[in-house]
Image (cartoon, rainbow, N blue to C red; front, side, top):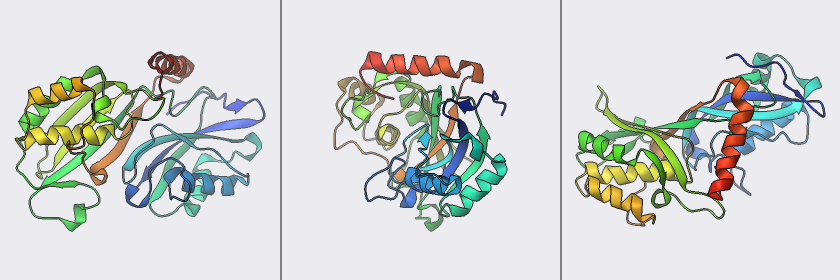
Length: 282
């Protein structure tokens, strides 16, 4: 990955970009919470200790829910420029202090225009489902379906949700946030081992959106609802408690897409403009 070299900011700070993986089972999500174990919390503690500063704020591309895993979460943080060391060495030292269920995969100095959240073009998640006898080895990584599933029906129905919509029916509403999103991909495939893989991509996701999308479409695969119901549910813009939200254990934050480094600043401005127009936040 090639980045511009202008990583030093006013005040003698340098921006670091990283890729992170974690097992979300024992975390209360990404974001800092009082009296709760979070990914951001353990990462900030480890990085601050290595850098010998009171606090290093770590920003992420997406705030995953409690129990959700990640293999390609992207982060950024700023540290004093005089404390920048070899990136491989820095990752090694931070990982030595991190618990076993989270790890930095790589670090690099990046442009001061880079923002893990606001520079992103899209985020992608993967959801895994298996059927049949309970498998203890999959209990933390995939959702077990009790019923037969029509994968073709779920694939066809999910395509109706693609594009720019108000996904309020699939989100837990937060004060001051928007539920308007562009869903770029929503694909269901049955793998050779019988596992069902769901790939979901959007410009951004609101709270609990992926799990709600998967749960609603599962009801179609189970024969409880049809494709027309799904469209009506989307257009109703009202979340119903009886509509199943898929368990967090099957969900993994897979990857983030960014523009070329020369377009980071432009993308941030565009993202903030869209947020202001929607009167909410991404």
